[in-house]
Amino acid sequence: MTRSAIRLGAGAGYSGDRIEPAVELVERGDIEYLVFECLAERTIALAQQARRRDPEAGFDPLLDSRMRAVLGAAVARGVRIVTNMGAANPVAAAERTATVARELGLGKVLLAAVCGDDVLAHVLEGDYRFEETGTAVRDLAGRIVSANAYLGVGPICDALGTQAHVVITGRAADPALFLAPLVHEFGWAMDDWAALGQGTVVGHLLECAGQITGGYFADPGVKHVPGLARLGFPIGEVEANGDLVVTKVAGSGGCVSAATCKEQLLYEIHDPAKYFQPDVVADFSKVRIEEIGPDRVRVVGGTGAAPTGMLKVSVGYVDSYVGEGQISYAGTGAVARGRLALEVVRERLRITGVRMSESRFDLIGVDALHGARDRRGAAEPYEVRLRVSGRADSMHEAARIGNEVETLYTNGPAGGGGVSKHAREVVAVQSVLVPAGAVTPSVRIVEARS
Amino acid sequence: MKLRELAHSRAGDKGDTSNLSLIAYHDRHYEHLRRHATAAAVRAHLGDLVRGDVVRHELPTLGAFNFVITHALGGGVTRSLAIDAHGKSLSSALLELEIPDPDDGAAPMR
Image (cartoon, rainbow over the protein chains, first blue to last red):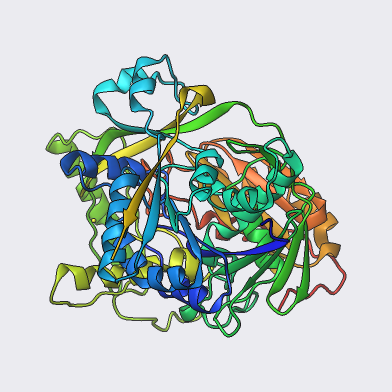
């Protein structure tokens, strides 16, 4: 039953990502697995709060939409789905997916929920300190809302060992969502550090979806990317030895090049020779990247060493509350009036006794009010801020406008930052390391029949 | 010339630490970049945008570097008051660094 190669598609690079590229992958990507990585560091803390308010909640808000869009085609074609859209409640996510399967009349569909990443009780009992600040977790006890361990491939492989069409996890190492199908299909030993290291390269490259197919890469004049508005998401063709070719659906937008692969390989890593994962310390330092055809890039040479035996745990806690206000000035003297306004606000906050532990006073933007004006030979502004606004009939519709700006993060031109969409409670996240033995993952099967 | 003419970059964040890749468009410029885009030069260039240290990792097989910068993100994306809380635009700041011309008629990837 061992295959000589498999094709994995990446259907999302974050929770709010575009959906139709995933549909394109299932229908035209000739893939065996479709992976959705949707769980940012803080997302799970917010999801735990949601679950506390409603025991049936706490999973990805787009789960229903995504499953409705891809599940029928995936089941029909035998494409298995692996995702961390379970967030704080993988079982409820599996049950919701079962409901979708029934409503779509897909016959018998099996969903596997991977549980056990919630280690809040253990962390509160233990003597843990945050990695970055050294603060004792216990000192924040009353404000802590979640503690979730980054699970490795073990329980995901267990779930793939069943007949489940869909595997839904909570917190798991992002690359593990891709590494697990490789271990499952190729029977890699869990001490084959070279294979697990190269498999981590596969996962790391694919997990941000569009960020390797030309999303978040374009820079007019130096880095051209065609078709950004209908960016294709990546496919990884992986051989039994872990050798990888990154590609995408023919005719989709974007591009796969050595340069796009290099940017993604180094994304969010520190020492390239030591990328700490639950199952391996991956070594990216000897990776070789070669263009072998149009939108086809070969990536080999990842390796690794034994893991540390400690699992990273993200601890979410209510840190503070942030308030924000913005106002604009235009025309001659606008900057001077803006600076004066900053000073007035600064003084008012002091006079009225607003207590702040930290504050920022910034002047942003250059041409948001009246378009680009003749600046009489002045140098180009150093920064610009894009703004899109629109009127809609419902909150749901209005939210879609901002979301289409937000998806520029992983799908648009390079270096965009700072999308703002308003006063909010701040749930912060810090990390502790917990012995792997303190975490006990398990798998629950949910069956849908229709 | 600016770094931007010879190399490209992407920023990543983990907690309060930022990493900035620097990837040569052409392998022949790797040595030139290695000489001029040092950790010290990058630290000085970023100035008070970041508070911590800069460590540079070298990846000669990829013609690339990875700069890891601590205390760079106002406490990290979950706490920062900055408009770009991830520090994603720091990649663009890095590429503004002025370095000498490599004198080989280098044309950026166009």
